[in-house]
Image (cartoon, rainbow, N blue to C red):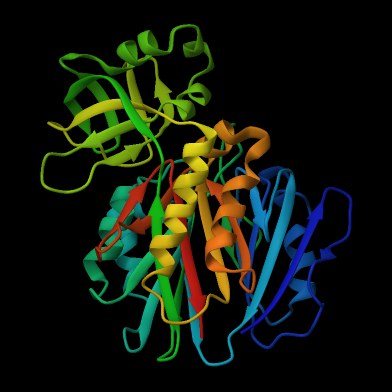
Length: 377
């Protein structure tokens, strides 16, 4: 596996942090600030650097490169697989009338199954229902094929996200990278580090990822009561107080972040499904707990590996970044301490993370977690 990494900021040239070498048929992962990705000639610049590359672009709430976390930048990681192969496919939400599950199913059907090891997803993050998207992907995917990835971000603005494959970034795009090869080893894991507090309430009215009522009362009104003065900053302030959702079906509880609010219907739109009958509690965390959670995620991903990691793809939640503030890089450093400094590291801060729970095969949508996808040939 040969890897080239670079970074740029506004009105600057690309700065390479590795030797700038010519790669054969590289997979080029580009994560960046939405405003920079919207600039004219952004895609053309990247395609000129890697004319035969397969370029996957996603907007972020922060960019990860090596041990660093950047803002208002674009980071690039180009990978030449020497023993493995890959295939990239994409679909747009606009072509599926809002049926995210159907899109996921159709996207997964694009991939030949022979020797398929893993699917890594870079999805638009502003309007997709991540739970339904994963359900569609899982419906078609073979059980032994891994699935991980994340929902694109837009800092804490929640205006729009951008993504694309081999074209200028646009809205509504969902990209999947299929990784193939007998010698290819891919492992993934996630962990949070958040704690529940306050009363436990029951979801009495919801529709997929829209939460209307808790204990028969308008959910948004209750949430605003908890937030107090911070309610005026919704949905931004919700990133500090996600919801722990227990479906009471034997599965592990999931964390859900509020992506938007609807004052007219007194409801909250979350990144993934919140089924009726589930119990919810507020959550909070500290800088140290989040850093410890990232370390735990790395341990879970490493302990099921046979080979040393060559490439680590990190997807962490924007809410974690806001809590960590000036210490955001602590969680990336914790990961590197576990996986080893030999690994090339890249990734982004997201509106949702995709990975299975430890020891389980089926992928789930998470919020407020550090999710790792570790690769080696």
